[in-house]
Length: 338
Image 1 (tube, rainbow, N blue to C red):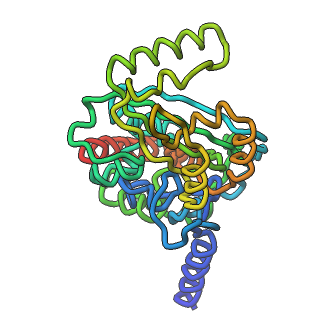
Image 2: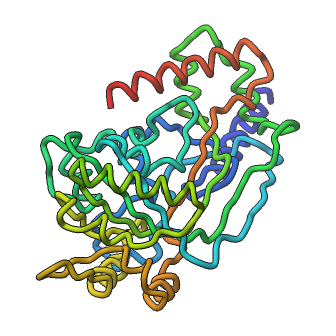
């Protein structure tokens, strides 16, 4: 009889954990960041890539294994923007470009979030993703990242001061030997390292411009002056002319939708002396093009993601501190080696 009850007990716990397992974007759920560290862009829709489906319609925004570890999760959802938001991000180096691209993505415990997404990629793959030609000395140049984004919805976890942990997770924590680093890492693989605190979905189209240093400094001064005066950007075309540029990147879209990318290449042509080239700056000067692009930008990509370490799981202070310490140390090591 005892063995029968024991079997029922374990089966119930297993069934609960199976029901709580998911692969979509579930607010409050936990993931193991180390499972795909360095290649998170393969399981999150954050950069353009080549797909068999030319339009990449219906692609999953988030395809990472996650598990529900909290009982009473609630969240607030806000609608996004009705129009396009344009940003020009100045980057002193190629690594700065990657940092600025992922500036709205936060993973507690790491300073270089971009390494979690692209750290395992070779330079050729990264350059291609950003529409650039391979450069063996990318940090000898300066860059401007032009982004046109449209947020569709924003989801934020409510305060978790009185959060309840799932019973089967509680049992695992009670039996966890916090002095055994191997046991803690096994727990991390089963129940995660971080939980999803907030995210924003939508889409954005982007283009990288590689500058010569004098042209970059001129653009930097111009943008600083405009920000001080709180005025709109005037004639940007002058600062993005061929005289100041070393390379103009191809237009890409975060959702990977090739139909929209092709539309942008065909319709956003900017005449430069004897030839024309695609430029996202055309949208800045044409309300008609801005309107058409605004209609096309769907809910196909992640614009922001915030992951926090699973501190709330642990009531015991010692176990909590040991757990956080191991995660933070491992994050630093993976960041250095990526």
